[in-house]
Length: 168
Image 1: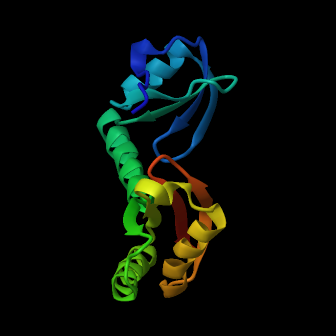
Image 2 (image 1 turned 180 degrees about the horizontal axis):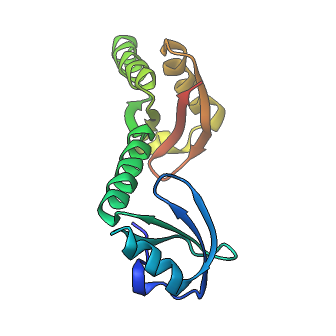
């Protein structure tokens, strides 16, 4: 959370003052604003220090912290994290196994996750033609039931060929 200046921590000499009800009291000197806030038994909180003149609000500091934490929680609850799930297949993986892996990939895509499909290569298969290896990857992609788009095109790495897909 951003460190907020209150009462005597405020450095600006002139401030635009707003009350806790939203009423604009106008531009005042720091001393006059502090006197006004103490007269109401509330705190002077610097809301926007970069504005000219800086904006300060007269309100209870505890209530201000509560409101800010509430805003942060609401913003945090609206964000959705996506995970990168991984599936490994080999050149000789059977059709039934491919169907099971494609079903799992479809579930993950439906949840909103990205899926990384790795065609794992061993031995001489590492030196096979790239188009043949892409065809092998497309075998499993045809079985995926959820509509997807390719987030990262097939690339050849040290362990094989990798493609990343995500939900449209």
